[in-house]
Image (cartoon, rainbow, N blue to C red; front, side):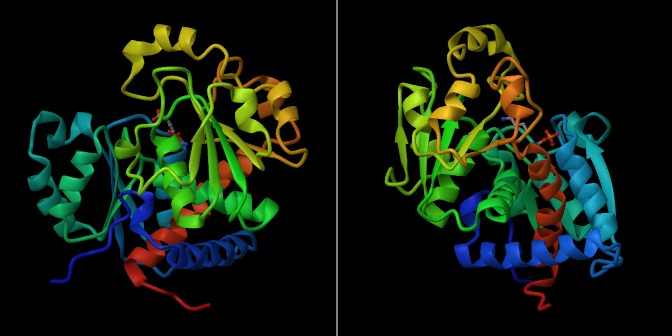
Length: 307
Ligand code: CP
Ligand code: NVA
């Protein structure tokens, strides 16, 4: 049996494969908007294993699979044997014999890597402590829809160097753009954890106002990611000066977009005026999760579908 392809981190796919996915996402989105049925995955089953909370990821995969003609089964750790210590390798053997594709949201990247190594079917990363590749797939698609190619542009990442930040950094290497990262001291990028080839595609700034200069996109995320709640109070103090506000947006390019993967905390990492303001594309960004992930599932299950 040939090994299935997985999407466990952004760099698992080539730029050329992403270009194909974007082209398919446009086609799938357009058909969906015209209420035209497209059921290429009828009789296929998606299993979704979630060890952390989710609104967008769960809904976009579950609705997306139904819209492609297949079905989706949601398992949380609480009511499956995974929560009672069944080895992830055993779970992978069993689940992948009963389904066609799997999405996992979990803690350490190692868990999803081990599952994938024992899976007969494609595995998609629906967020780990280290990465969130489906999010950046949607974010890039959204940027391109609004502003065209991202190659050569500057993206400013303000805040925590978390899973979403790491994935932006991998995307910069694949698509050849620059990321200006500004984190509080002690929260800097860890290149090994981010899985980077080198440091050519990002630069770190102590001052967030300096980081946004020249940026075509300013983006941020919560100060405390899921799984790190014990650090909440400390992080609130440490990140105080890393709020994306109107002054910061004024220091970026006049046509800069604002993105946030959501859920957001208005008054913490972003001011209400920015997230609800004219430069924000957060709702397009959230909607596009649906379209790009449908293209991703189509690609992993059917290969290159021609229009
Ligand atoms: N952005 C994102 O992944 O949202 P959820 O946590 O709601 O899935
Ligand atoms: N960095 C956040 C993203 C949530 C979608 C977290 O991991 O909680």
